[in-house]
Image (tube, rainbow, N blue to C red):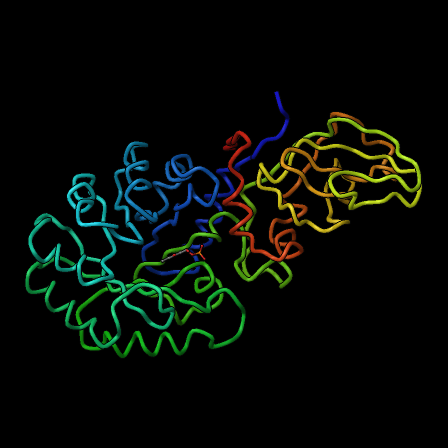
Length: 356
Ligand SMILES: Cc1ncc(COP(=O)(O)O)c(C=O)c1O
């Protein structure tokens, strides 16, 4: 068996979820879209059923996957329906679509789904992707209140919650509060960044994603804001090793040229497994207790490391590409991306679930 695996620690997932609850007085929707950010949506949702009030996914297919996994709690579809034909199916599965465009609203108001238990309306507070304008939200709230006397939640999503700049959310919050003032609605605002850094931006329902997986959206270069524990680790084993001479190259394009006799270790994990192809020379890879440098170009199925100074490392030694150390946030930063992207792309290797 190829020894490359993704390890998912469900005990840590629950630990991080309890931390999210400590940051937030209201209800929690665990965001498990994109296969729970690469962690496995069904397994993660099942592990969280007693800790959250519901789940959020992107679309109908992801919602159906959770229903088929036995999840009975509310499931919010963050992008709502993609076409009028989806709504009956969405309701058949008792999923809750976010309503963010007039056609979605009119379809519901037209009576397609008389059995709604709540209505979630999205407002654009400055991100300018999805949502009703601040000027029009009261109109839609009133129309739904008139026709569907069920609780209404007005939600919005922050464009600036991922950094640590004080008051970065104030403009969006001001827009949001002004637009809903006087309306009898619940609110949903906070993602992980807002939960961790902006207590003023909580709302009734929080929607944390990344922090549940043990990562801080502001990156790992700052002091920790909560004792989050990474849930995913990408692990493998040293496959083979060989010595090359001074002046010889390693891998595609000869990116690495040996400046001394060099012991090259081959690890069967590459960009096909989600490890970033543009990882720079010297990127840390942990083998046992030792950190060794990446050398040469990361290829689809393999990457290479310099084992010259690590004589104890042998074929079969355990490798951690990301996890506790190296942290995926550090790796992402070195590669000019974000942890979200790396964990979502870890799809090929088999997932192993650990639950203590
Ligand atoms: C609408 C919405 N809410 C919440 C989240 C969760 O965000 P995070 O993973 O930063 O907590 C996302 C993620 O993209 C989102 O799109």
